[in-house]
Amino acid sequence: MKLAIREKTDKAARLIFRMTGLMVIAILAGIFLMLLWNTVAFFLKVRAFDFITGSQWDPSGNPANYGMLPLLMSTTLVTFGAMGIAIPLGIGTASFLSDYAGKKLKSVLKPAIEMLASVPSVAIGFLGIVVLGPGIAGITGQSNGLNALNGAVLLAIMSLPTIITVTQDALEGVPNTYKEASYSVGANRWQTLIQVTIPAAAPGILAAVMLGVGRAIGETMTVLMATGNTSAFPKGFFHSVRTMTATIAIEMGEVPYQTTHYYALFAVAAVLFLMTLLVNIVGEHFVNKYRKYQAS
Amino acid sequence: MNKKITAIIEWGTLLVSTGLVCFFLIAILWDLISKGAPSLSWQFISTSPTNGMTKGGILPAIIGTILLTLITALVAAPFGICCAIYLNEYAVDNWLTRIIRASIRNLAGVPSIIYGLFGLALFVQGLQMGTSLLAAGLTLGLLSLPYIIITTEEALRRIPNRMREAALAVGATKFESIRDVVLPSAIPGMLTGLVLTLSRAAGETAPILFTGVAFYINKPAGYLNQEFMALPYHLYMLSTQHQAIEQVRPLAYGTALVLIIVVFLLNLSAFYIRYQHSKHE
Image 1 (spheres, rainbow over the protein chains, first blue to last red):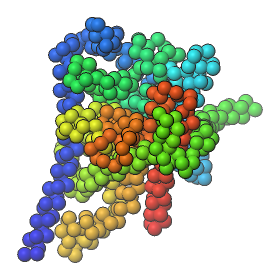
Image 2 (image 1 turned 135 degrees about the horizontal axis):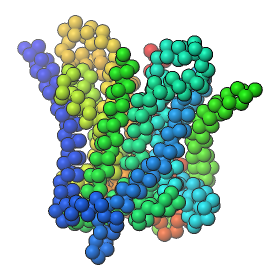
Image 3 (image 1 turned 180 degrees about the vertical axis):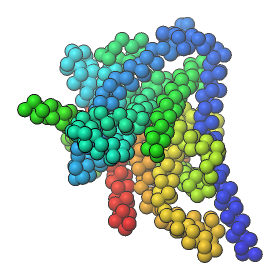
Image 4 (image 1 turned 90 degrees about the horizontal axis):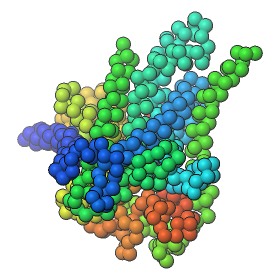
């Protein structure tokens, strides 16, 4: 009898655990369906073609314009800027950590990088306003330094810890025999790093970059605070831009429920979701490639 | 001679990039601490804002953030731990498991503002909770879920199989071996992951923007069905939306410092648990 109860508990527990696993799929599906539902509602009112190719975002205008191109370009501009800074710095730091730094230095630098990763995005955005903004303004002579460059620098700082950690793992995963072979034919440390270790770890490094890109595209608070939020078509790094995330954050609080504008913001979110999904899938592809190579 | 110069340049490139990364961290900490410390006082963290936010403290925001983080933990921890147990202890490598794992990885990559929209559509409007502490806590719980699953599974994976086998050999059912043997030994690792995840959740702003946070609440905090104040949102509002931005700058710096301290304290306790645990091993 007692055994029967214990076996029943065992079966019940197994069922509960499995249910939670299925719930995870349901959450992702729920997010996807919510975005899809509201996007379809939007496309019933505004042509999808106008949304994707329109170069003016002016929901309160008469007639209202829902062209998402300026938002998309802003996000792209800021993300590219951030990666232009973060990729070289990240690979350099990771190489230093994996190939040059001693154990002691590593035990100081690793927690420092984890600390940088844990600084909340709103605090980094705040420093964009009070430190980096005036700094940029002083150099360019603008009234304030809230522009794409400011956002790009902040996003670079935010994505650096991820890029460094994953790149370092990739570099350290390269078998020692590769390096030894390189040393034995007379290459020095630097030549080995540039011509052997980094190429061998390339898939892992690409995965790191993709994670950084995903983070930069989806980041809201820093760009909301630091880029000035002018919804005109972006003109360059020294001009104010307004990313997709910032647009959602600014306008969602003010729109009435279930209006065209409300649906439009969900459509922007759907595009954002697809972009991060794509970036993640590409990143995963590289991770798998890297694993396969490591296993062989 | 030439070789020496190139060697220095090569070395220098790596050193400069590492130095820059360290500089970012030091600059952030230095600016926040040096300008935030003068605003910190017992009165700042123990009173409510007064005079249209230009004076007084940030007590309601601190309480709001603590309550929000607690709700997040209560939502995400049991759910995440159960899912991690399923993945590590029960699941076989089939298409379903692969879909679950892919879902978790993708959930971890979904931008936080989209969780905010999901919370708005599901909890605030769909389930009629309104903008409230509960809706925001549930939203942050969903956001934290993938991280908790990933870290818990890692902790479970580190428990050697012979412990499970020993429990099964003396007649325990699978559930009993998990409950009495696997989970107790995995607790330090699970706790580390949980606290690190919560430190991230405590600093999040975008998911709570539309689900319940407010700039000023007159009533005492703590009701699940009411709007609440939170440190990150308070900092955002003080630094961008206040009508006397320059005047409240010291308050904004103080808020930023308190927020950073809360997050770092959570992080430190996570590292402490990990360190204690590694000593035992």
